[in-house]
Length: 336
Length: 130
Image (cartoon, rainbow over all chains, first blue to last red):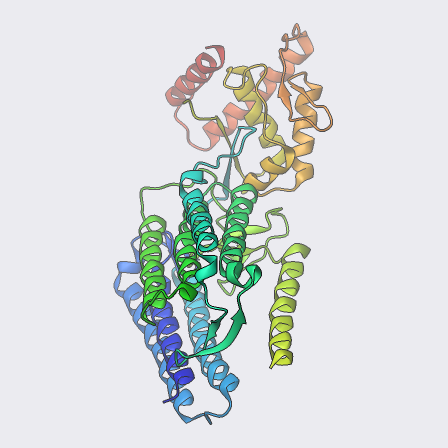
């Protein structure tokens, strides 16, 4: 098996595991995005539905892996994309069918009680500089260290590695190339912080907001670690291939578990709850509520936010995201 | 630190959302939980939290400003101001009495025991006076 295929296989297994776990990553009283009795997921019918979804999702994962092993290996794009699409489509379809069944047969209607905090200053308790500042300090210290040992850097050093772990792109010693990993790291960190700031400003004060903001702040640490290691490689730092993905995976698993504990906790009530009615959730996944001015709404399943697709901003953001993805692929192809 | 008061509305209710906002805020203004000098959330923030249109909240703020509870100036948060209660006229007292009787009749028609109503009225009056 080629290294690209091994990576595609690992990606499939990782995403398959997420789909198996996903229905549990939700608030109490929500099951497959439908409002139910809080005890329903533990009932005989609840367990049967979960088991059935997991079998459907596992079947699509097995089909995707079978496709990966049979596809011609000289088409790397196809090898990565087609099996992943098969698996995601199969699991999402299974999820949608379960949403329909739960909503129609076991769904409940909660009163549409809305609540607002009467303070002119919105609560932003979880946005802490003590958490997000250290990664920037660490990068500044690394930059100072690189500057101090600039003369010891080799005139030519690797800046990109292939799936087999061998360098495939090189750069010459210039300030921009030496400090590029740190600049990119700082840029990524600022992007994460900007996202956290925006969510803390424009979303309702729910447990999901606290979890998402904290998650984005903590994500700065594995990102900073990765960019610092890459920046120090030209100085002869020897790091085994598995360290960075292993560290990222461990951080990701830890953060998902912590988020699950927070989101699924029965005791924590939202200070400002999201709209409750299932009718706002199309196929259990897409929020559509024209009377709600919110652009970002806490997801019913999983971590983070989705958008209110009744407003034009959601479509503008979607179009921009799509344009960035398509543009990046086109630029990457042109560069080859 | 004392937590900020909260406003609750029920979108399933037959009472329009702007009226519920006015009524809910007026209770907090009368019982002093929103004291003169307090700032209310911006129209945008309140509409976002309640999941209602901006105009719904703007209309509620405008009605409370007309009653003399709020100072609304462009580019500033709505601020609670000191307000002297006007002298009641016989017409307004008759109107409030009628509305109260209609509410009590509705509660009795829905099965609320008389003793509970009496206690609820006494508690509400004491809370508003305190």
